[in-house]
Amino acid sequence: MGRLLGTRSADLVVVLFGVSIITFLMIRLIPGDAVEIMLGANSEVTEEAVAALRHRLGLDQPLISQYLFWLGGVFRGDLGQSVWTGAPVGGEILGRIGVTIELTVLSLGMAIIVGFPAGCMMAYIRGTIGDYVIRLATIIGVTIPSFWLGIVLIFVFFKLAPSFPSIGYVPFREDPLGNLARMILPTVALGLPIVASVSRIVRSTMLDALNQDYIRTARAKGLTEVGVVFGHALRNAAIPAVTNIGIMAGYLFGGAIVVEQVFALPGLGRLILGAIAERNYPLIQAAILVVTGGFVIINFLIDVLYMIIDPRVSQR
Amino acid sequence: MTTAATNLQATRSSNWRLLKRHPLLAIGLILVGTQLIFAFFAPLLSPYDPVGQDIVARLQGPSGAHWLGTDKFGRDVFSRIIFGYRSSLIVSGLSVLIALLIGGWLGVIAAYYQGVADRIIMRLMDILFAFPIILLAIGIIAVLGPRQGTTAVAIGIVYMPIFARLLRGPALVIAESEYVRAAKAIGLGDLAIIFRHVIPNLTSVILVQASLSLSTAILVEASLSFLGIGTQPPTPSLGLMLSEGRSFLTLSPWTSIFSGLAILFASLGFNLLGDALRDTLDPRLRGER
Image 1 (cartoon, rainbow over the protein chains, first blue to last red):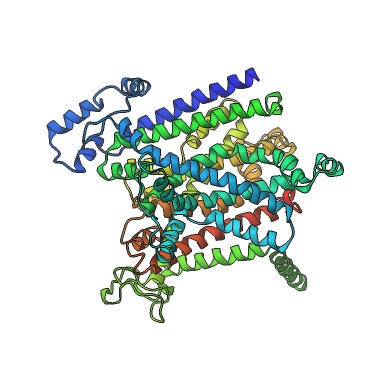
Image 2 (cartoon, helix red, strand yellow):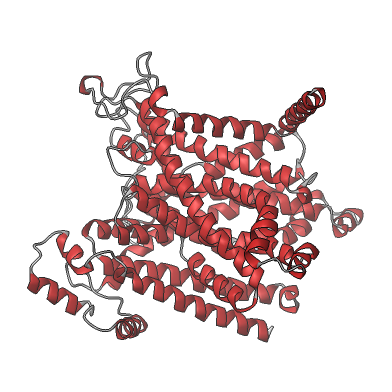
Protein backbone atom coordinates (compact mmCIF):
# COMPACT_ATOMS: atom_id res chain seq x y z
CA MET A 1 0.00 0.00 0.00
CA GLY A 2 2.77 2.42 0.97
CA ARG A 3 4.83 1.61 -2.10
CA LEU A 4 1.80 1.96 -4.38
CA LEU A 5 0.96 5.30 -2.81
CA GLY A 6 4.57 6.34 -3.44
CA THR A 7 4.48 5.50 -7.16
CA ARG A 8 1.08 7.15 -7.56
CA SER A 9 2.38 10.31 -5.87
CA ALA A 10 5.42 10.32 -8.15
CA ASP A 11 3.09 9.95 -11.16
CA LEU A 12 1.02 12.84 -9.83
CA VAL A 13 4.06 15.12 -9.63
CA VAL A 14 5.23 14.14 -13.14
CA VAL A 15 1.80 14.76 -14.68
CA LEU A 16 1.34 18.09 -12.87
CA PHE A 17 4.82 19.16 -14.00
CA GLY A 18 4.00 18.20 -17.62
CA VAL A 19 0.65 19.99 -17.49
CA SER A 20 2.38 23.13 -16.19
CA ILE A 21 4.98 23.01 -19.00
CA ILE A 22 2.34 22.58 -21.72
CA THR A 23 0.19 25.41 -20.37
CA PHE A 24 3.25 27.61 -19.92
CA LEU A 25 4.36 27.03 -23.52
CA MET A 26 0.90 27.93 -24.87
CA ILE A 27 1.62 31.64 -25.24
CA ARG A 28 5.15 30.96 -26.49
CA LEU A 29 3.89 28.66 -29.25
CA ILE A 30 1.62 31.24 -30.86
CA PRO A 31 2.79 31.59 -34.46
CA GLY A 32 4.19 35.08 -35.07
CA ASP A 33 4.68 37.67 -32.36
CA ALA A 34 2.24 36.82 -29.57
CA VAL A 35 2.42 40.32 -28.13
CA GLU A 36 1.54 41.99 -31.43
CA ILE A 37 -1.31 39.52 -31.98
CA MET A 38 -2.69 40.21 -28.50
CA LEU A 39 -2.48 43.97 -28.90
CA GLY A 40 -3.96 43.77 -32.41
CA ALA A 41 -7.26 42.51 -30.98
CA ASN A 42 -8.47 45.93 -29.84
CA SER A 43 -5.83 48.63 -29.82
CA GLU A 44 -3.20 50.19 -32.02
CA VAL A 45 0.10 48.34 -32.29
CA THR A 46 2.90 50.76 -31.44
CA GLU A 47 6.48 49.83 -30.70
CA GLU A 48 6.30 51.22 -27.16
CA ALA A 49 3.08 49.34 -26.39
CA VAL A 50 4.59 46.09 -27.68
CA ALA A 51 7.75 46.56 -25.62
CA ALA A 52 5.74 47.47 -22.51
CA LEU A 53 3.44 44.44 -22.74
CA ARG A 54 6.36 42.13 -23.58
CA HIS A 55 8.11 43.33 -20.46
CA ARG A 56 4.95 43.04 -18.34
CA LEU A 57 4.42 39.43 -19.47
CA GLY A 58 8.11 38.73 -18.91
CA LEU A 59 8.53 37.62 -22.51
CA ASP A 60 11.85 39.47 -22.81
CA GLN A 61 13.51 37.02 -20.38
CA PRO A 62 15.19 33.68 -21.19
CA LEU A 63 12.66 30.80 -21.44
CA ILE A 64 13.78 28.92 -18.31
CA SER A 65 13.64 31.96 -16.05
CA GLN A 66 10.26 32.85 -17.58
CA TYR A 67 8.98 29.41 -16.62
CA LEU A 68 10.42 29.52 -13.09
CA PHE A 69 9.06 33.02 -12.54
CA TRP A 70 5.62 31.96 -13.83
CA LEU A 71 5.58 28.77 -11.74
CA GLY A 72 6.66 30.72 -8.66
CA GLY A 73 3.70 33.01 -9.24
CA VAL A 74 1.36 30.02 -9.57
CA PHE A 75 2.52 28.66 -6.20
CA ARG A 76 1.88 32.07 -4.60
CA GLY A 77 -1.61 32.10 -6.15
CA ASP A 78 -0.63 34.66 -8.78
CA LEU A 79 -1.85 33.31 -12.12
CA GLY A 80 -0.98 36.41 -14.17
CA GLN A 81 -2.74 39.58 -15.23
CA SER A 82 -5.34 40.30 -17.85
CA VAL A 83 -3.77 41.86 -20.96
CA TRP A 84 -6.51 44.48 -21.09
CA THR A 85 -7.48 45.41 -17.57
CA GLY A 86 -4.32 44.40 -15.72
CA ALA A 87 -6.55 42.75 -13.12
CA PRO A 88 -5.36 39.40 -11.70
CA VAL A 89 -6.91 36.62 -13.84
CA GLY A 90 -7.12 34.31 -10.82
CA GLY A 91 -9.86 36.50 -9.35
CA GLU A 92 -11.83 36.56 -12.59
CA ILE A 93 -11.66 32.77 -12.84
CA LEU A 94 -12.70 32.30 -9.19
CA GLY A 95 -15.68 34.57 -9.78
CA ARG A 96 -16.96 32.45 -12.65
CA ILE A 97 -15.88 28.89 -11.99
CA GLY A 98 -18.55 28.36 -9.32
CA VAL A 99 -21.34 28.28 -11.90
CA THR A 100 -19.51 25.70 -14.01
CA ILE A 101 -18.72 23.56 -10.95
CA GLU A 102 -22.35 23.71 -9.79
CA LEU A 103 -23.55 22.52 -13.21
CA THR A 104 -20.93 19.75 -13.31
CA VAL A 105 -21.73 18.49 -9.80
CA LEU A 106 -25.50 18.54 -10.36
CA SER A 107 -25.13 16.59 -13.63
CA LEU A 108 -22.78 14.10 -12.02
CA GLY A 109 -25.31 13.64 -9.20
CA MET A 110 -28.05 13.03 -11.72
CA ALA A 111 -25.87 10.52 -13.59
CA ILE A 112 -25.35 8.54 -10.38
CA ILE A 113 -28.89 8.78 -8.98
CA VAL A 114 -30.57 7.83 -12.27
CA GLY A 115 -27.83 5.84 -14.02
CA PHE A 116 -27.21 3.21 -11.34
CA PRO A 117 -30.82 2.06 -10.79
CA ALA A 118 -31.44 2.19 -14.55
CA GLY A 119 -28.41 -0.01 -15.22
CA CYS A 120 -29.54 -2.52 -12.55
CA MET A 121 -32.99 -2.66 -14.07
CA MET A 122 -31.60 -3.18 -17.55
CA ALA A 123 -29.44 -6.05 -16.36
CA TYR A 124 -32.41 -7.56 -14.57
CA ILE A 125 -34.76 -7.52 -17.57
CA ARG A 126 -31.99 -8.73 -19.89
CA GLY A 127 -33.15 -10.32 -23.14
CA THR A 128 -36.69 -8.92 -23.11
CA ILE A 129 -38.01 -6.45 -25.67
CA GLY A 130 -37.92 -3.77 -22.96
CA ASP A 131 -34.19 -4.37 -22.50
CA TYR A 132 -33.64 -4.01 -26.22
CA VAL A 133 -35.62 -0.76 -26.46
CA ILE A 134 -33.84 0.77 -23.45
CA ARG A 135 -30.44 -0.29 -24.80
CA LEU A 136 -31.16 1.42 -28.10
CA ALA A 137 -32.32 4.49 -26.17
CA THR A 138 -29.08 4.56 -24.18
CA ILE A 139 -26.99 4.28 -27.36
CA ILE A 140 -28.88 7.25 -28.80
CA GLY A 141 -28.55 8.98 -25.42
CA VAL A 142 -24.75 8.69 -25.46
CA THR A 143 -24.53 10.42 -28.85
CA ILE A 144 -27.10 13.20 -28.24
CA PRO A 145 -25.29 16.54 -28.48
CA SER A 146 -26.06 18.10 -25.09
CA PHE A 147 -26.09 21.63 -26.53
CA TRP A 148 -28.79 20.54 -28.97
CA LEU A 149 -30.78 18.82 -26.22
CA GLY A 150 -30.59 22.11 -24.31
CA ILE A 151 -32.00 24.06 -27.24
CA VAL A 152 -34.82 21.55 -27.69
CA LEU A 153 -35.65 21.73 -23.96
CA ILE A 154 -35.77 25.52 -24.08
CA PHE A 155 -38.11 25.35 -27.06
CA VAL A 156 -40.41 22.75 -25.47
CA PHE A 157 -40.63 24.69 -22.20
CA PHE A 158 -41.24 27.91 -24.10
CA LYS A 159 -44.26 26.28 -25.78
CA LEU A 160 -45.63 24.31 -22.82
CA ALA A 161 -44.69 26.41 -19.79
CA PRO A 162 -43.78 29.95 -20.92
CA SER A 163 -43.44 31.16 -17.33
CA PHE A 164 -40.68 28.63 -16.51
CA PRO A 165 -37.31 30.40 -16.21
CA SER A 166 -35.41 28.28 -18.73
CA ILE A 167 -32.67 30.81 -19.52
CA GLY A 168 -30.57 33.04 -17.30
CA TYR A 169 -28.91 32.87 -13.92
CA VAL A 170 -29.36 34.10 -10.37
CA PRO A 171 -26.68 33.51 -7.72
CA PHE A 172 -27.49 30.77 -5.19
CA ARG A 173 -26.90 33.13 -2.25
CA GLU A 174 -29.50 35.64 -3.49
CA ASP A 175 -32.27 33.21 -4.40
CA PRO A 176 -31.54 29.51 -3.75
CA LEU A 177 -34.80 28.23 -5.27
CA GLY A 178 -34.56 30.49 -8.30
CA ASN A 179 -30.97 29.35 -8.81
CA LEU A 180 -31.88 25.66 -8.68
CA ALA A 181 -34.94 26.16 -10.93
CA ARG A 182 -32.72 27.70 -13.59
CA MET A 183 -30.24 24.84 -13.22
CA ILE A 184 -32.80 22.09 -13.93
CA LEU A 185 -32.76 22.26 -17.73
CA PRO A 186 -28.98 22.73 -18.09
CA THR A 187 -28.43 19.80 -15.71
CA VAL A 188 -30.76 17.53 -17.70
CA ALA A 189 -29.16 18.58 -21.01
CA LEU A 190 -25.64 18.00 -19.73
CA GLY A 191 -26.38 14.95 -17.58
CA LEU A 192 -28.56 12.81 -19.85
CA PRO A 193 -25.76 11.53 -22.11
CA ILE A 194 -23.77 10.57 -18.99
CA VAL A 195 -26.83 8.86 -17.45
CA ALA A 196 -26.94 6.74 -20.59
CA SER A 197 -23.28 5.84 -20.43
CA VAL A 198 -23.33 5.10 -16.66
CA SER A 199 -26.33 2.83 -17.06
CA ARG A 200 -24.59 0.95 -19.87
CA ILE A 201 -21.50 0.37 -17.74
CA VAL A 202 -23.60 -0.69 -14.73
CA ARG A 203 -25.69 -3.02 -16.92
CA SER A 204 -22.71 -4.96 -18.22
CA THR A 205 -20.93 -5.22 -14.85
CA MET A 206 -24.22 -6.18 -13.19
CA LEU A 207 -24.64 -9.01 -15.70
CA ASP A 208 -21.24 -10.33 -14.62
CA ALA A 209 -22.03 -9.91 -10.94
CA LEU A 210 -25.44 -11.63 -11.13
CA ASN A 211 -23.74 -14.79 -12.46
CA GLN A 212 -21.41 -15.08 -9.45
CA ASP A 213 -21.64 -17.78 -6.82
CA TYR A 214 -22.29 -15.39 -3.93
CA ILE A 215 -25.49 -14.24 -5.67
CA ARG A 216 -26.71 -17.83 -5.80
CA THR A 217 -25.85 -18.13 -2.11
CA ALA A 218 -27.73 -14.93 -1.31
CA ARG A 219 -30.81 -16.17 -3.16
CA ALA A 220 -30.52 -19.60 -1.53
CA LYS A 221 -30.57 -18.10 1.94
CA GLY A 222 -33.91 -16.49 1.04
CA LEU A 223 -32.96 -12.88 0.43
CA THR A 224 -35.50 -10.79 -1.51
CA GLU A 225 -34.63 -9.91 -5.12
CA VAL A 226 -34.23 -6.25 -4.16
CA GLY A 227 -31.81 -7.30 -1.45
CA VAL A 228 -29.87 -9.47 -3.88
CA VAL A 229 -29.62 -6.81 -6.57
CA PHE A 230 -28.93 -3.75 -4.44
CA GLY A 231 -27.34 -5.35 -1.39
CA HIS A 232 -24.91 -7.75 -3.06
CA ALA A 233 -24.65 -7.47 -6.84
CA LEU A 234 -24.57 -3.67 -7.11
CA ARG A 235 -21.88 -3.29 -4.46
CA ASN A 236 -19.45 -5.20 -6.65
CA ALA A 237 -20.78 -4.05 -9.99
CA ALA A 238 -20.46 -0.41 -8.99
CA ILE A 239 -16.65 -0.43 -8.81
CA PRO A 240 -15.89 0.11 -12.53
CA ALA A 241 -18.50 2.86 -12.74
CA VAL A 242 -17.19 4.56 -9.59
CA THR A 243 -13.59 4.54 -10.85
CA ASN A 244 -14.85 6.28 -14.00
CA ILE A 245 -16.36 9.14 -12.01
CA GLY A 246 -13.21 11.26 -12.20
CA ILE A 247 -13.06 10.87 -15.99
CA MET A 248 -16.78 11.57 -16.28
CA ALA A 249 -16.40 14.72 -14.21
CA GLY A 250 -13.71 15.96 -16.59
CA TYR A 251 -15.93 15.21 -19.56
CA LEU A 252 -18.92 16.92 -17.92
CA PHE A 253 -16.86 19.98 -17.08
CA GLY A 254 -15.90 20.37 -20.73
CA GLY A 255 -19.52 19.85 -21.75
CA ALA A 256 -20.64 22.41 -19.16
CA ILE A 257 -18.55 25.04 -20.95
CA VAL A 258 -20.66 24.43 -24.08
CA VAL A 259 -24.04 24.06 -22.33
CA GLU A 260 -23.45 27.36 -20.48
CA GLN A 261 -23.59 29.12 -23.84
CA VAL A 262 -27.02 27.62 -24.59
CA PHE A 263 -28.56 28.74 -21.30
CA ALA A 264 -26.72 32.06 -20.98
CA LEU A 265 -25.05 31.00 -17.71
CA PRO A 266 -22.15 33.26 -16.68
CA GLY A 267 -19.62 30.47 -16.06
CA LEU A 268 -16.08 29.70 -17.10
CA GLY A 269 -17.10 28.94 -20.70
CA ARG A 270 -18.24 32.49 -21.32
CA LEU A 271 -15.11 33.86 -19.71
CA ILE A 272 -12.83 31.72 -21.89
CA LEU A 273 -14.72 32.46 -25.12
CA GLY A 274 -14.60 36.16 -24.33
CA ALA A 275 -10.88 35.84 -23.68
CA ILE A 276 -10.36 34.13 -27.05
CA ALA A 277 -12.18 36.96 -28.84
CA GLU A 278 -10.02 39.52 -27.00
CA ARG A 279 -6.90 37.36 -27.33
CA ASN A 280 -6.44 37.64 -23.59
CA TYR A 281 -4.03 34.68 -23.49
CA PRO A 282 -2.97 34.89 -19.82
CA LEU A 283 -6.61 34.31 -18.84
CA ILE A 284 -7.03 31.27 -21.13
CA GLN A 285 -3.73 29.88 -19.87
CA ALA A 286 -4.67 30.29 -16.23
CA ALA A 287 -8.14 28.79 -16.73
CA ILE A 288 -6.71 25.68 -18.42
CA LEU A 289 -4.08 25.31 -15.70
CA VAL A 290 -6.56 25.64 -12.82
CA VAL A 291 -9.12 23.23 -14.29
CA THR A 292 -6.65 20.58 -15.46
CA GLY A 293 -4.63 20.75 -12.23
CA GLY A 294 -7.86 20.42 -10.28
CA PHE A 295 -8.90 17.30 -12.16
CA VAL A 296 -5.49 15.68 -11.89
CA ILE A 297 -5.62 16.10 -8.12
CA ILE A 298 -9.25 14.92 -7.88
CA ASN A 299 -8.41 11.79 -9.89
CA PHE A 300 -5.43 11.16 -7.63
CA LEU A 301 -7.61 11.44 -4.53
CA ILE A 302 -10.17 9.02 -6.05
CA ASP A 303 -7.34 6.55 -6.70
CA VAL A 304 -6.14 6.81 -3.11
CA LEU A 305 -9.68 6.45 -1.77
CA TYR A 306 -10.12 3.42 -3.96
CA MET A 307 -6.95 1.86 -2.53
CA ILE A 308 -8.31 2.34 0.97
CA ILE A 309 -11.79 0.96 0.17
CA ASP A 310 -10.72 -2.03 -1.93
CA PRO A 311 -7.87 -3.93 -0.28
CA ARG A 312 -7.40 -6.06 -3.42
CA VAL A 313 -5.98 -3.04 -5.28
CA SER A 314 -3.17 -2.43 -2.83
CA GLN A 315 -2.23 -6.13 -2.78
CA ARG A 316 -1.89 -6.30 -6.56
CA MET B 1 -15.65 -19.98 -61.99
CA THR B 2 -18.48 -21.90 -60.40
CA THR B 3 -16.57 -22.28 -57.17
CA ALA B 4 -15.88 -18.54 -57.16
CA ALA B 5 -19.58 -17.88 -57.70
CA THR B 6 -20.60 -20.22 -54.87
CA ASN B 7 -17.97 -18.67 -52.63
CA LEU B 8 -19.32 -15.25 -53.41
CA GLN B 9 -22.83 -16.43 -52.72
CA ALA B 10 -21.73 -18.01 -49.47
CA THR B 11 -20.05 -14.77 -48.41
CA ARG B 12 -23.15 -12.85 -49.36
CA SER B 13 -25.47 -15.07 -47.38
CA SER B 14 -23.13 -15.04 -44.37
CA ASN B 15 -23.00 -11.23 -44.60
CA TRP B 16 -26.78 -11.23 -44.69
CA ARG B 17 -26.93 -13.47 -41.65
CA LEU B 18 -24.46 -11.18 -39.87
CA LEU B 19 -26.71 -8.19 -40.50
CA LYS B 20 -29.77 -10.11 -39.35
CA ARG B 21 -28.00 -11.13 -36.17
CA HIS B 22 -26.87 -7.55 -35.55
CA PRO B 23 -29.69 -5.22 -36.56
CA LEU B 24 -27.79 -2.34 -34.92
CA LEU B 25 -24.91 -2.95 -37.33
CA ALA B 26 -27.39 -2.57 -40.19
CA ILE B 27 -28.70 0.74 -38.78
CA GLY B 28 -25.12 1.94 -38.27
CA LEU B 29 -24.13 1.01 -41.83
CA ILE B 30 -27.17 2.82 -43.25
CA LEU B 31 -26.46 5.99 -41.25
CA VAL B 32 -22.74 5.99 -42.08
CA GLY B 33 -23.39 5.13 -45.74
CA THR B 34 -25.89 7.97 -46.13
CA GLN B 35 -23.42 10.41 -44.62
CA LEU B 36 -20.58 9.28 -46.87
CA ILE B 37 -22.81 9.58 -49.96
CA PHE B 38 -23.93 13.06 -48.86
CA ALA B 39 -20.34 14.12 -48.21
CA PHE B 40 -18.89 12.75 -51.46
CA PHE B 41 -21.68 13.85 -53.79
CA ALA B 42 -22.76 17.01 -51.96
CA PRO B 43 -22.79 19.27 -55.07
CA LEU B 44 -24.85 16.71 -57.01
CA LEU B 45 -27.33 15.91 -54.27
CA SER B 46 -28.11 19.32 -52.79
CA PRO B 47 -31.15 20.91 -54.46
CA TYR B 48 -29.90 24.47 -53.79
CA ASP B 49 -26.65 26.38 -53.44
CA PRO B 50 -25.76 25.97 -49.72
CA VAL B 51 -24.62 29.60 -49.44
CA GLY B 52 -27.17 31.05 -51.91
CA GLN B 53 -29.42 33.57 -50.12
CA ASP B 54 -33.10 34.20 -50.80
CA ILE B 55 -34.21 36.78 -48.24
CA VAL B 56 -37.86 36.65 -49.34
CA ALA B 57 -38.09 32.96 -48.48
CA ARG B 58 -36.37 33.18 -45.09
CA LEU B 59 -37.22 31.23 -41.92
CA GLN B 60 -39.72 28.94 -43.66
CA GLY B 61 -40.84 25.58 -42.32
CA PRO B 62 -40.53 22.33 -44.30
CA SER B 63 -42.28 22.44 -47.67
CA GLY B 64 -42.17 20.85 -51.14
CA ALA B 65 -39.71 23.48 -52.30
CA HIS B 66 -37.50 23.39 -49.18
CA TRP B 67 -37.74 19.93 -47.61
CA LEU B 68 -36.26 21.02 -44.26
CA GLY B 69 -37.16 24.72 -44.48
CA THR B 70 -34.88 27.75 -44.79
CA ASP B 71 -32.65 29.71 -42.39
CA LYS B 72 -32.45 33.42 -41.54
CA PHE B 73 -30.93 34.27 -44.94
CA GLY B 74 -33.37 32.09 -46.85
CA ARG B 75 -30.71 29.44 -47.45
CA ASP B 76 -31.99 25.89 -47.97
CA VAL B 77 -31.46 23.90 -44.74
CA PHE B 78 -31.35 20.49 -46.48
CA SER B 79 -28.59 21.63 -48.85
CA ARG B 80 -26.66 23.13 -45.96
CA ILE B 81 -26.95 19.91 -43.97
CA ILE B 82 -25.61 17.90 -46.93
CA PHE B 83 -22.61 20.23 -47.19
CA GLY B 84 -22.40 20.32 -43.40
CA TYR B 85 -21.84 16.55 -43.41
CA ARG B 86 -18.98 17.13 -45.80
CA SER B 87 -17.12 19.62 -43.57
CA SER B 88 -17.98 17.64 -40.43
CA LEU B 89 -16.57 14.42 -41.89
CA ILE B 90 -13.48 16.15 -43.30
CA VAL B 91 -12.59 17.69 -39.93
CA SER B 92 -13.43 14.66 -37.76
CA GLY B 93 -11.88 12.22 -40.28
CA LEU B 94 -8.65 14.23 -40.43
CA SER B 95 -8.50 14.51 -36.66
CA VAL B 96 -8.93 10.76 -36.13
CA LEU B 97 -6.29 10.14 -38.82
CA ILE B 98 -3.84 12.46 -37.04
CA ALA B 99 -4.58 10.80 -33.70
CA LEU B 100 -4.22 7.31 -35.18
CA LEU B 101 -1.02 7.98 -37.11
CA ILE B 102 0.82 9.81 -34.32
CA GLY B 103 -0.83 8.48 -31.16
CA GLY B 104 -1.25 4.93 -32.45
CA TRP B 105 2.32 4.84 -33.75
CA LEU B 106 3.65 6.04 -30.38
CA GLY B 107 1.63 3.33 -28.62
CA VAL B 108 3.03 0.59 -30.90
CA ILE B 109 6.60 1.91 -30.52
CA ALA B 110 6.20 2.03 -26.74
CA ALA B 111 5.00 -1.58 -26.68
CA TYR B 112 7.66 -2.84 -29.09
CA TYR B 113 10.71 -1.24 -27.47
CA GLN B 114 9.39 -1.19 -23.87
CA GLY B 115 11.74 0.06 -21.15
CA VAL B 116 12.68 3.72 -21.15
CA ALA B 117 10.98 4.56 -24.48
CA ASP B 118 7.75 3.02 -23.19
CA ARG B 119 7.90 4.95 -19.93
CA ILE B 120 8.64 8.31 -21.57
CA ILE B 121 5.99 7.96 -24.30
CA MET B 122 3.26 6.78 -21.98
CA ARG B 123 4.00 9.52 -19.39
CA LEU B 124 3.71 12.10 -22.18
CA MET B 125 0.38 10.57 -23.21
CA ASP B 126 -0.78 10.60 -19.55
CA ILE B 127 -0.01 14.32 -19.41
CA LEU B 128 -2.00 15.04 -22.58
CA PHE B 129 -4.84 12.83 -21.31
CA ALA B 130 -5.04 14.88 -18.10
CA PHE B 131 -6.55 17.88 -19.94
CA PRO B 132 -10.35 17.88 -20.33
CA ILE B 133 -10.99 17.27 -24.06
CA ILE B 134 -12.93 20.42 -24.94
CA LEU B 135 -10.67 22.63 -22.83
CA LEU B 136 -7.45 21.42 -24.48
CA ALA B 137 -9.04 21.77 -27.92
CA ILE B 138 -10.10 25.34 -27.04
CA GLY B 139 -6.56 26.11 -25.85
CA ILE B 140 -4.97 24.76 -29.04
CA ILE B 141 -7.44 26.70 -31.18
CA ALA B 142 -6.72 29.85 -29.15
CA VAL B 143 -3.02 29.40 -29.93
CA LEU B 144 -3.34 28.55 -33.63
CA GLY B 145 -6.33 30.75 -34.45
CA PRO B 146 -9.81 29.42 -35.37
CA ARG B 147 -9.81 27.77 -38.81
CA GLN B 148 -11.08 24.47 -40.18
CA GLY B 149 -7.58 22.96 -40.34
CA THR B 150 -6.84 24.10 -36.79
CA THR B 151 -9.93 22.33 -35.47
CA ALA B 152 -8.79 19.03 -37.03
CA VAL B 153 -5.29 19.43 -35.56
CA ALA B 154 -6.70 20.35 -32.14
CA ILE B 155 -9.05 17.35 -31.96
CA GLY B 156 -6.29 15.14 -33.38
CA ILE B 157 -3.86 16.11 -30.62
CA VAL B 158 -6.54 15.66 -27.95
CA TYR B 159 -7.30 12.13 -29.23
CA MET B 160 -3.67 11.00 -29.52
CA PRO B 161 -3.42 9.48 -26.03
CA ILE B 162 -6.60 7.45 -26.59
CA PHE B 163 -5.04 5.61 -29.55
CA ALA B 164 -1.65 5.31 -27.86
CA ARG B 165 -3.14 3.70 -24.76
CA LEU B 166 -5.50 1.47 -26.70
CA LEU B 167 -2.93 0.07 -29.13
CA ARG B 168 -0.15 -0.34 -26.57
CA GLY B 169 -1.88 -3.20 -24.73
CA PRO B 170 -2.52 -5.55 -27.67
CA ALA B 171 0.79 -4.53 -29.28
CA LEU B 172 2.56 -5.61 -26.09
CA VAL B 173 1.02 -9.08 -26.37
CA ILE B 174 2.05 -9.33 -30.03
CA ALA B 175 5.58 -8.08 -29.31
CA GLU B 176 6.02 -10.91 -26.80
CA SER B 177 4.59 -13.56 -29.13
CA GLU B 178 6.46 -16.54 -30.59
CA TYR B 179 6.20 -15.33 -34.16
CA VAL B 180 7.69 -11.93 -33.43
CA ARG B 181 10.51 -13.65 -31.54
CA ALA B 182 10.97 -15.96 -34.53
CA ALA B 183 11.05 -12.98 -36.90
CA LYS B 184 13.73 -11.37 -34.74
CA ALA B 185 15.68 -14.62 -34.67
CA ILE B 186 15.88 -14.82 -38.46
CA GLY B 187 17.23 -11.27 -38.45
CA LEU B 188 14.26 -9.22 -39.63
CA GLY B 189 14.61 -5.49 -38.88
CA ASP B 190 12.44 -3.76 -36.28
CA LEU B 191 10.50 -1.67 -38.81
CA ALA B 192 9.81 -4.71 -40.98
CA ILE B 193 8.49 -6.63 -37.96
CA ILE B 194 6.32 -3.71 -36.84
CA PHE B 195 4.80 -3.19 -40.29
CA ARG B 196 4.51 -6.85 -41.33
CA HIS B 197 3.60 -8.53 -38.07
CA VAL B 198 2.54 -6.10 -35.36
CA ILE B 199 0.34 -3.55 -37.14
CA PRO B 200 -1.63 -6.04 -39.33
CA ASN B 201 -2.64 -7.88 -36.16
CA LEU B 202 -3.98 -4.65 -34.67
CA THR B 203 -6.36 -3.98 -37.58
CA SER B 204 -9.55 -4.92 -35.75
CA VAL B 205 -8.68 -2.84 -32.68
CA ILE B 206 -7.85 0.11 -34.95
CA LEU B 207 -11.08 -0.21 -36.94
CA VAL B 208 -13.26 -0.35 -33.83
CA GLN B 209 -11.53 2.56 -32.11
CA ALA B 210 -11.45 4.68 -35.28
CA SER B 211 -15.20 4.28 -35.68
CA LEU B 212 -15.94 5.06 -32.01
CA SER B 213 -13.55 8.03 -32.06
CA LEU B 214 -15.18 9.40 -35.21
CA SER B 215 -18.49 9.26 -33.37
CA THR B 216 -17.21 11.50 -30.56
CA ALA B 217 -14.98 13.65 -32.81
CA ILE B 218 -18.11 14.63 -34.76
CA LEU B 219 -19.65 15.84 -31.47
CA VAL B 220 -16.50 17.74 -30.46
CA GLU B 221 -16.27 19.41 -33.88
CA ALA B 222 -19.94 20.39 -33.68
CA SER B 223 -19.41 21.76 -30.13
CA LEU B 224 -16.45 23.87 -31.20
CA SER B 225 -18.30 25.19 -34.27
CA PHE B 226 -21.32 25.87 -32.06
CA LEU B 227 -19.07 27.96 -29.79
CA GLY B 228 -17.91 29.90 -32.86
CA ILE B 229 -14.29 28.71 -32.75
CA GLY B 230 -14.51 25.77 -35.18
CA THR B 231 -15.62 26.00 -38.79
CA GLN B 232 -16.12 29.65 -39.73
CA PRO B 233 -19.10 31.09 -41.67
CA PRO B 234 -20.23 31.06 -44.44
CA THR B 235 -18.93 27.45 -44.76
CA PRO B 236 -21.92 25.22 -43.95
CA SER B 237 -21.27 23.45 -40.65
CA LEU B 238 -23.76 21.51 -38.54
CA GLY B 239 -22.63 23.06 -35.24
CA LEU B 240 -22.67 26.56 -36.69
CA MET B 241 -26.16 26.06 -38.15
CA LEU B 242 -27.41 25.01 -34.73
CA SER B 243 -25.93 28.11 -33.14
CA GLU B 244 -27.31 30.43 -35.84
CA GLY B 245 -30.78 28.86 -35.68
CA ARG B 246 -30.88 29.43 -31.91
CA SER B 247 -31.59 33.17 -32.26
CA PHE B 248 -34.79 32.38 -34.19
CA LEU B 249 -35.78 29.41 -32.07
CA THR B 250 -39.25 30.61 -31.11
CA LEU B 251 -39.99 32.01 -34.56
CA SER B 252 -38.72 29.10 -36.61
CA PRO B 253 -37.23 26.15 -34.74
CA TRP B 254 -36.62 24.08 -37.88
CA THR B 255 -33.00 25.01 -38.54
CA SER B 256 -32.00 24.15 -34.97
CA ILE B 257 -34.02 20.94 -34.81
CA PHE B 258 -32.84 19.50 -38.13
CA SER B 259 -29.19 20.48 -37.82
CA GLY B 260 -29.11 18.94 -34.32
CA LEU B 261 -30.73 15.74 -35.59
CA ALA B 262 -28.12 15.65 -38.37
CA ILE B 263 -25.31 15.79 -35.78
CA LEU B 264 -27.05 13.09 -33.72
CA PHE B 265 -27.40 10.73 -36.73
CA ALA B 266 -23.80 11.31 -37.79
CA SER B 267 -22.43 10.49 -34.35
CA LEU B 268 -24.91 7.64 -33.77
CA GLY B 269 -23.99 5.93 -37.06
CA PHE B 270 -20.30 5.64 -36.22
CA ASN B 271 -21.08 4.67 -32.63
CA LEU B 272 -23.35 1.77 -33.71
CA LEU B 273 -20.84 0.71 -36.35
CA GLY B 274 -17.95 0.73 -33.88
CA ASP B 275 -19.96 -1.18 -31.28
CA ALA B 276 -21.10 -3.81 -33.76
CA LEU B 277 -17.58 -4.16 -35.20
CA ARG B 278 -16.26 -4.77 -31.70
CA ASP B 279 -18.87 -7.48 -31.13
CA THR B 280 -18.13 -9.26 -34.40
CA LEU B 281 -14.35 -8.78 -34.62
CA ASP B 282 -13.47 -9.49 -31.02
CA PRO B 283 -14.01 -13.21 -30.41
CA ARG B 284 -13.61 -12.72 -26.66
CA LEU B 285 -16.81 -10.70 -26.53
CA ARG B 286 -18.81 -13.12 -28.66
CA GLY B 287 -21.89 -14.44 -26.94
CA GLU B 288 -21.50 -12.07 -24.03
CA ARG B 289 -24.33 -9.75 -25.01
